[in-house]
Image (cartoon, rainbow, N blue to C red; front, side):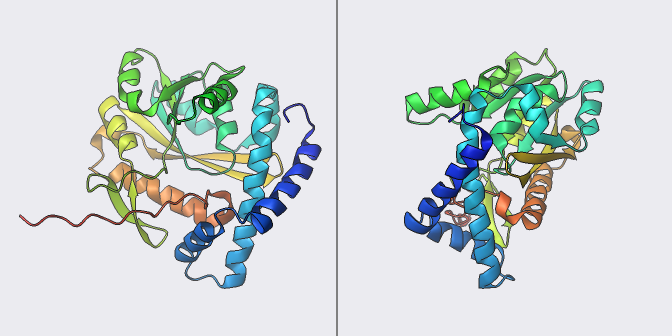
Length: 280
């Protein structure tokens, strides 16, 4: 599909939407439950409208992915508008390392392909290994084709960042995935629900002194996105325990409340309950 024009891809996306949403009903119960719990103030009509727009976005993401095989830097610049690039440029001038913390919003794969064009930082992206080796190799190829972005498996992040500490780094991290639901995870109310979060972004930022930047990426139209940045923390070593996580979670929450159909609702984000503390 990478050679097909966008209008043809979106025609296919419309067909996929009908099959996925109306016929296969892919994860409809999960999406509906997530939306109802996250927006208790909305009526059924509003929930269904968000649900349909989400599935249309999901199908568009599916057909946009192969374009990573052929789109170069000019293609991404044409289709992604960055509104406040000065925030990350200033961090580079201050010789700061950066964590780009992006939720599953907009087209996060496309954003990964353009981070090296934002600043002259050494670019890395964190990924989680999948069981299907062939699929993993395909995704790694698509993410790094025509791009000097280094992919780092999640279990070796700290070790690799220590190895490249002599460079000025910008690291892309998907920071809204679901951990195992342990007491050691960061727990807080998020979208009206008790939610656990991986703490890696805070732990590594504090240990290696990385500024944390929240990435807001919204769909403006088919194949068109807008990116803006928000500085979560500039001096992580002075932040209190849990402060970075809480600020990041609030960034994600504000984003979702403003752009409810742009987040990945088919993910079983609330499958864990907070463990009860053991009595002494």
